[in-house]
Image 1 (cartoon, helix red, strand yellow):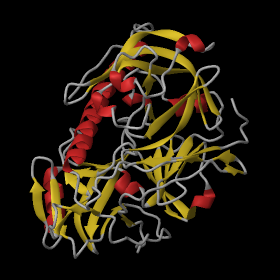
Image 2 (cartoon, one colour):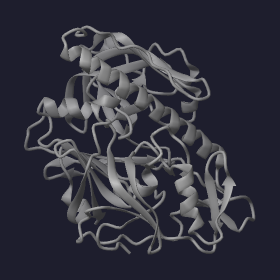
Image 3 (tube, rainbow, N blue to C red):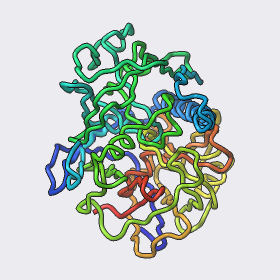
Length: 429
C-alpha cells in the first residue's frame, strides 16, 4: 500500500523480540516490546497515555531550554570566555573501522526501545532506552536514595578504573514534580562492541517515581549535541569522533520481529530498495525534517509542516488544530478527551493514515497498513468507538511541528545520518 513519491503509511505498536545476531560487519542489538496502551480487555489505557504525553512534553521543553543554553555556551566558548563553565541543573514541567555495529533491541511494553550497554572498566551492565529525541546518557548511581532505584542496575564509580568526576550537575523535573538528578562523570561506554572513551553521563542519585514500574535502568540519547543537558556530545557522536564506527550514521528497524539498532551504517538485509533521505531542517538539535503532509486514504488532510522523528516517543502528536482537521476527514470520528487531545473513530472502519514528504523517492513502495495498527483500543468496555494513534497536543515545539514516535517508525527502516544531516526512510524487507 505504499504509494510512489514516498507515501509512508502509519503502522502502530507491533511487538519486536530479537536475540543478538552476528552479521558480516556488525552485531544486531534486539529490542523488546513497549508497554501497551491497550489493556487486556481491549480498552484504551488513558492513564498510561496521559503519563507518556506529559513525560514527552517535559522532555521536549527541556530540549528547548538546552538548545538556548548550549547556543549561549557556544557563543561564550567561541570568545574564549567559558572554557571551564560548569554544567548546571535545569528543571522543566575502539573497534576496527571495517566493523559496523548493530544491536538487537527489545520493545518493552510500548514504553521505550531497549538494549544492553556497559559503563566503566570492567563494564557494568545496564538495560537502557535508545532515544533519538534526547542527547544525554543517565543511569542509576549506587548512591541513589530513591526506592525506585532498588531493583535497577546501578553504577559504582569506585568499581571502574576509567571513571572520572566532572563539575556540574544533571537534573530533570517532570510535570508531576518528581525528578531525575545526579552528578556528572566521564567513563568508558560500550554498546554492541562500539566503545566511547571519556563519555559524559550522569549517575543519578534521585530517580522519578514514574520509573518505578518501568524496566529501563536509564536513557541513552541519540539526537544532536544541542539537546544535551550536560552540554556535551552524546554517545554516538563521541564514538564516531574516536573512530569507533566507520560511518557517521545509525539506523533503526522497529517492527513486529527482528527489531534492531545498527551503529555506523545500515543493515541492507533489513530493507529493500533505496533509502530516501530528507535534510534536517535548520540547526535546532532535533532530527527534524520539513515539507510533510498527512493523508486519510488518498486525500491530503494537512500539508507543509515540520516533523521531529523520535524513537523515545510512543504516539504521534500534532498541533491541536491540525489534528482536529485530520480527524474531521475521518467519518464518524469524535473528540474523546479534549484536554489530552485524543479522538475516536468507529471500530468497524479503521482509517488508512499516511505521511509523505516533498521530494520523495518515486521508487519507494508503500507498506501495507494493517487493521489493528491505528487502533489503540476501544474508548470503553463495550464501546463501538476506538481511540486513534494520533493526538493533538501543544508540546511547545511550534505551531507547525508534529512529533512522530514509534507508531510511525514501525512502518519503515529509518536512518539517522549526521554525515548528511538527514533522516532517511526505506521499505522494510
